Length: 550
Ligand code: HEM
Ligand SMILES: [Cu+2]
Image (cartoon, rainbow, N blue to C red; front, side, top):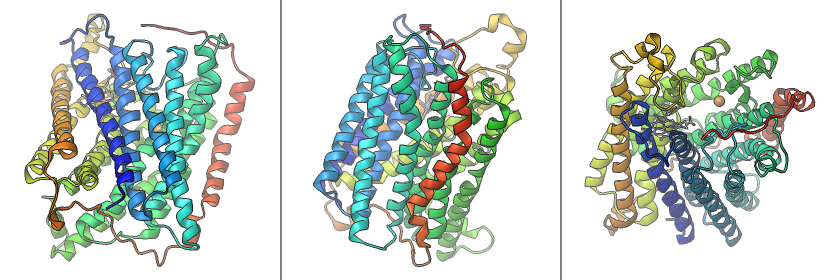
């Protein structure tokens, strides 16, 4: 087991993650009822206030804290315990991120920042909200430097050796994060903060949106890659086999690093300020990410088949039955993967120039990210939670808790299927996202959207309610694993960190030459962004004032 300091750090990160999860999912519950006109919020609480809290606390805060908990525990496990410097930086990172989170939450709840998690100008929040966001990012940088420092020290002690797969993947994820954050830091520090505090009167909206999405797309890979780390390194262990291919796993992470940054314009396909040439180039680069995604899918199913056949499965699909379905740590991740199949297909639709016209800003998009980040990522994190907390606390994941965990992932799946299917269909018909209740002035065509069997006022609310109940069950399990479950005394009761063996003997060394990959990543970024961004700055229209609509 890893050292007590490292354990504490990981546990505190998990604690903050789940506090954000409680508030965030409660807001989700309110949203489905408001949208269906069955709930009137009190006058001091506005729909966009809770929607901002929901987006920020779940998509940014829950994910980030959980990711650091997982990476901290995994780096300590695979490279050895942290030294005092690494420890100091990681704690500082945690504290600064937490202060930023608390400040942002206070600003949102006090109604001074109802700008949604994308905080598009010219909507204007209190300047302190942007300061809070900056603190969150700075905190994650400190934590990232801590983990990178730990890795560099290991490399110095093990000259010429490839690092363990977990560490390699962590480094790829953190490099992605550091490069991605440059965009959001640039816009927050140089555009939003001076504008929000009134030091300048106007803001260049197109530039701010572009810098946001330069960050916003890799952000989704910052959520996804840690889930993939679990798929590649934890799942084979649960199945009793080795990693399918060490070099393929590493190569896929390199490709994710290269092709997830120079693609932000695919979120801005409807914006007039960017010429179609640059949009098209970035759409092509976006589609490159399909390659490592399919490589990952291939590795996973190869791992499943090898393990199933080893356990005696025969025939074309006999191995399928031999998978450890009774192990909730595996089943949760399998469901997560299954959700990602339609999720990924939907992503291809969203990124397609023409199809995007149809789905842009509709409920389809909301359906899409609930079956990408809201289930594949979130449910992988749930699956990790079930063993990571016992591993860190030394408590037992008892039979009763395992049963509850099955109910939890099952109900999350049902709730999400109902809610996201309704959202996808409603969106295709035309229903907009990011709106409170609307009767559409009695417009017959609009009201017809809600007449379907799945696409109606009730399905989304039923799905959302099941999801919320599932979320509360998860919180109950987490609280048990943290404070109440009996301590593991016997050796075989002690929870392991399941980390599969990975055969590095055929892995090419250049895969771990980060300077090559950082160089290629920067070249691609310059190719995709240098000209359009400089155009936006040099030929900027008159800046925009500000709006506070709430
Ligand atoms: C109890 C579970 C959940 C429920 C009931 C729920 C419900 C909803 C609904 C109805 C919306 C759309 C609101 C609108 O466009 O007007 C929404 C938006 C959103 N949800 Fe969820 N959700 C849940 C869990 C999650 C999770 C786990 C995540 C991510 C980890 C997530 C991330 C988001 C994001 C990023 C938005 C967009 C916010 C925006 O448009 O600014 N949700 N959610
Ligand atoms: Cu994107």
